[in-house]
Image 1 (cartoon, one colour):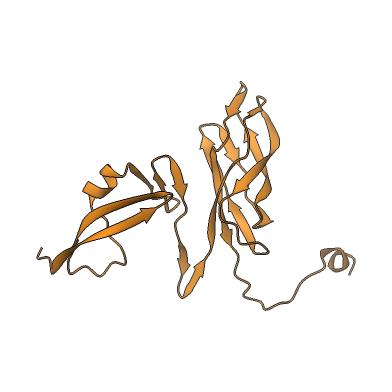
Image 2 (cartoon, rainbow, N blue to C red):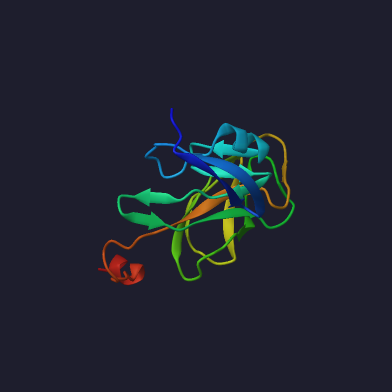
Length: 171
């Protein structure tokens, strides 16, 4: 492949900054970082959820659907906690860079083998309640700042109509 040229650029991901030589090549993708940079920056790519871990810090990927771009925020455990065996517990999740007043879905999944996070609808505030399920036959300890999921903004495709579920149920 032929490169058009190169520049030295300052790259910022998470709370880290690097000065790195960048070659400009005839590629149509929006962003493509070389394996040399990813290794030097200690980046782990979570392809299934579209996120990065940069030096231990989770960075949410951008969610796109056609012309819509959805705000995403990482959710981490707010403190150390123990989940008893074969039980569930509500813990506090700390949201990074929340967009106050924005409705979002917590995209949970598995924290570790046998420990799951329930998806839920929440407002993007600085903290949210998170339901964690321990399927193991022994207690599991979650440390502060454990990655427990990400909040993904909901786009309102039905206008500003709000439904009062109580009154709808009585009809």
